[in-house]
Structure formats: C-alpha cells, structure tokens
Image (tube, rainbow, N blue to C red; front, side, top):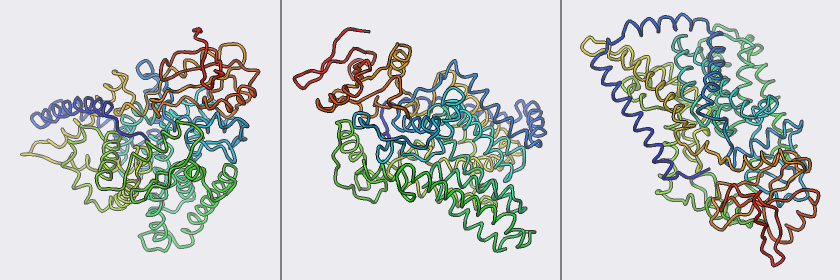
Length: 574
C-alpha cells in the first residue's frame, strides 16, 4: 500500500533501460543473423524436448531448481529483512500458527503494542487470509520463515508448469515453467520478502490446470485438484480469487450439463467430479467460517473486513467516497490513516489515471521483461487462438476487478500468473513459426527473448537487486540488528520506540510475535505519560530501552520517563 516514490521509479527505470538495450541488441542480431549458432540451439532444444516428455520429472525438477538457484544466490541476495507493514502482519500470523493456535488473546497493554494491519479485538491476530501464514509456519518450523517463502515459490513454479502441461505440448510447458522460475523465483519480491503472491498463484494454476484435464476425462483426482485450487484462492486473495473462479464455475456448470464435448456419461461426471468437488468446497466454507469465528467472533466476518471497519476511513474502490475521519490512539496511525491514506486518492479522473498507471507499471515490471517485446508479432495470433479464449476471459475479468481497486501491488493479481505465462508461451509458439524472406527470423527472436530473461535474472542477482521495483523488499536491517543484540543479552527486554514529527509512516518498528508476556524482546509505542506509566508498571521485571529510529536507528539506551510530560532517556551508548 505504498505510493510510487520518484527515487525508486528512477532506479527501476535505469535497470529497465539496461534490459531494453540488451533486448534491442539481441533482437537486431536475431534479425540480421537468424542462423547464428542455430545448430547449437537446435541441439539444446532437442535435449530439453526429450526431457519435457517426462512430465512428472519436469515438475519435480523445477521445484528443486528454484530452491537451488535461490540458495546459490544468497551471497548476493541475503535472506530478506521485513520492512513493510504487511510483512510483519503475515509474520505474526505464521508465528501464531507455530504456537498451535489461530489467534492470540488480547493483551492488557495492547494500546502500547497497537500496530498496522493487526486486529486486537476480539483477538490479537493478523488481518490477512491464512494461506501465506501457512507457508511461513512451515519455514518457522524448519528454522526461518523465509524458508517457507522459498518453498512456496518453488511450489508455484512447479504448479504453473503442471497447469501448462494441461494446455500446451510438453516442451512448451517446460519453457513456460522455466520463464516463471527465472522471472519470479530468484530476483522478485515474491521470493525476497514476506508479502506473498506464490500461494494465490498456486491456487490459480491448480484450478486452471485441473479444469482442462476434467474437460478431457472425468477423474476424481482432478476434481480434488480443482477443489484445492479454489480453497487456496479463497484463503489467499479472496476478492481476486472470486473473480478468477466465477468463469471457472460457469464453465463447470456448462460441462456438467453436457453442453461441451465429453466422452463421459452424466453419472460419471457427477460422481467422479461434481461430488468430490462439492465436498472440497463445503470443507473450505466450513474452514473459513471457523477461522473467521476464531478471529472475529463471527463466522461471516473476515478479519480483513473487521480491520477495515476499525481503522480505515479511505475506501477500497475508485467510485467510493471516503468515510469520516477516525480518531486513533497514536500519532503514527493519525498520519497513516487520516493523512497519507486519505490523500492517496480523491475521486476524479486525474487520480484514477494515476493509480491505474501505478497498477500497469508495477504489474508490467513484475510479470514481463524487456526481451518480451520481441514476441509482439506473435501476440495477435495467440489472442485469436480458440483454445486461448477461456484463459483470456479469466484474464479480462480479474484485470477488470483489480483495475477498480485503489490500492495496487503486483501480487494482488497473483491468481492470473498462470494465465499470463500461458499467453506468453502461446505468443512465442506463433513467433517461432514466422519467417522473413525464407529466413527463420521468428525462431531466432524466440531464442533471443529467452536469453534476455536469463541475462536479466543474472544481472539482478549479480547487482544484489532483490526486485526491479526495489522498495517491496528493502527492509531496514537496523531493527533486526537491535533485536538480535538483545536476544543475546541476559534477561527480558522492552523497547520503547520514540518517533519524531517527520517520521516516515511506512517505516514502523512496533511489531511483536504471537507471545507477548513470554517474549524475550518486545517493541512498544511511546504514548502519553499515563499509558507509558501503565506499560512500565506492567513490565517492571524487564529492562526498558529506548530507540529513536528517526534520529539514529542504531541508538539504544536505557529508557527514563521525563516527569514534566516529555520522555527523555539516558544517553549512554550501549
């Protein structure tokens, strides 16, 4: 939920300029010398085509290769440090699950711990759907939440490859899976932060991959894959997932009624597909109702909706008018919700165009690369393919739904990741057949655009660029360094965070895990004298520290409240 920052945009444009220059050079070489190294490329492609026929091995290989590639890149791209509000909320969710519960009890001193995108009543929990938290808890059990992120991204690449195998010949499915791995599995904030994206992309891939298999043969396992895909979408990106599933549901009803070509009898369609799918959907509804009840006290009230009602006065859709401003218990919330969030969008053509441009820019940088411009001649043919009509309908519906939302991030559209790469590969297939004056120019261009993607990934890793947009995965390591220092200091600690009037509202330090009283290190917000006194009295058995992120984000000193009403501290460096 950050606005485009000019400095970050300029850094991104510089990276894109380099990619564009490389793409232009390779494109010119491909047109002028289309037969250059043709026999070598043909040999590689032939070997990969033979390997692609082992479909199960291809899916498993891509899963493993993504993990290996990202681990090998660790000297250049370190384990990500959280920095965005949303990341800390997801990490709270993963930690909550790791403690064996869905939500945590409200703490008596919750006002001092109040933070962004977290609900405190009737329970202390993240406002987000649980899918990303399930990935993080796997990582936490294995030693670090980021391991869960890495595994989920590897699973995403494998799932999209499996989906493509249902829509395309095996060798083209392998190409599409490799493209996803290179674009999103190494130097992307999807794998280099805790924001997510992979879970919803897995859900979309499972749903679309199962759908095309069901259309050819009614099998229970494909019905279960479809149900699992729907469940993941509902528990990762409910709004975009609903838009994705709407045309899938219409197709399914049409297929079940026997309106499509199918060799299966009506009874087989019902018992092998409809019944198992109904069970999966019913279990998903029951789970979501139970999850909502545990977090909000109402099976029909999602945690995200509760948080919106509690904290937000700005509205999510372009046509909505902001609600009256709310009052908050700390200045940081006032600045974020009553100023920045409300000022980010005003109903009008100018702001609508601006936020639309943000979506196009962020989505374009996330999903595409400059070398893909070489595939433009094949795009019209891909869009006219009869087989691509349904994916195009899904794509159009989800993009339309995302376009009318004020806030934007590329992973909001994660369910259609598989659709985008399906259309990309189909365009490359058409491009490959094109000849100019009898010369295989299209084949050379198709090879050039893949080389561009490989070079992009290598350049990003070598330069330590975690994502072309930069800001989604550049957390401040200072907070983590202070926490690590106190983790190795005897006793329990409470860190009081003091902000200045010009504090950056996107750089908040007050985040905690599922356990508060039992945590070794806690972060609290400095508030008024009365609340501060209650906080210090409650945690009288802890060492109390002060940090000042806006003046010196490495400064740590014993905390002393000022009796005049202003808080001060000893200036002894620790």
